[in-house]
Amino acid sequence: MASLTSHDALPPFPDDVKTAPLYSISLAKLEAGDASSSDAFFEACRQLGFFYLDMLGSTLGETIVKEAEKLNKVQQEFFKLPNEVKDVYGRPHLHPFYAYRVYETENLQGESVRNENYNLRKDDILGQCERLACHPLILEHQALFESYVYHCRAAIDILLEHLNTHLQLPEGTLANLHRIHERSGDHVRFTQAQPQPWDDDRATRGEHTDFGSITVLFNWLGGLQIRTPDTNEWVYVRPVPGSCIVNLGDALVKFTAGLLRSNIHRVVPAPGQQAELVRNSLVFFSRPEDSVVLRRLKGGLIDAQPVSEQVEEEMTADEWIMKKGTGQLPGVFTAKGFEYKPHNILPTAVKA
Ligand SMILES: O=C(O)CCC(=O)C(=O)O
Ligand SMILES: [Fe+2]
Picture 1 (tube, rainbow, N blue to C red):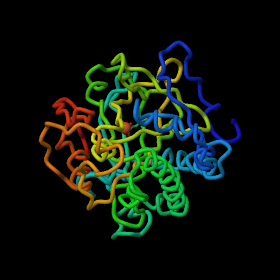
Picture 2: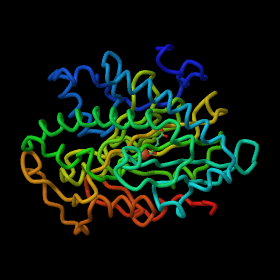
Picture 3: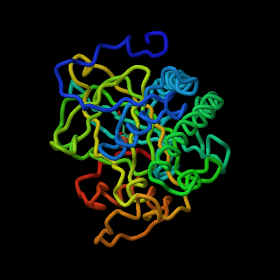
């Protein structure tokens, strides 16, 4: 794998920390319609909502891995830019959500440093809306962003298709809620965290569920943790070269009345020797089209799901994303419905 990914250039993920026993699902086998892989995939989506997607042996998968490596270099270059340059593209002044964001923190030496991320929306990348201002470095890599979006979406569309079949929904139901050329909150996220001491409060405030449909995540160092539903314990997710980590978001829980799982997770300092390094991750979030109302779908297995007693305000995907993404709906979405969590807000320190 050394030739395809850069994981080997980094200190290893330690063997003495507890890790999540995620299923590994082969994209190549899903592409070929392999029934047992498809069953394992559906099981993973129901039980935990997190799994490794093994990209090896799939032309599409290996292309995504190579592009993710290239984008990881681009993000490292971007985050090296002077703060005042990055701040030009910051939220909320550029956009309340699709923009650069800063969380002030202290590094291992006690100095004030930035944890940062940068949301780049699919509709800007594909030229489907008036483009938000972005740094020339982003425009320089336009072709790479564009193919990354198309390829991630192609993989996600395969997953949606398998879900559609298992849920016994009318053909194309999920695909029709996620048409790539319709406006949606899909976006690429760059993230960078400085080496920093463990902070209980920060760890707790970072607990979240993703609020879209399917997330495709690449990371190179540990630090991602999920809380296992059976033991309620926080365990690490080990980065696996050649695989991405896929997780389901709240929209799929809402669509399926809790049949699928959007599991709570967080990012804490990387364990062991990896704790000394700057940590990057690259995330592709897919969301339902902006105008889709988030409510249970009709048909197939969903009809057998219990009716929730909780009264929830119905919102479009766009309203849900903007509220969740700007801290107006702190909480997590579980099989029981939406659970308000007032501490689930990270302090923002975005410079104008
Ligand atoms: O950085 C990671 O490994 C995970 C990031 C994440 O969960 C998110 O951005 O929603
Ligand atoms: Fe997440």
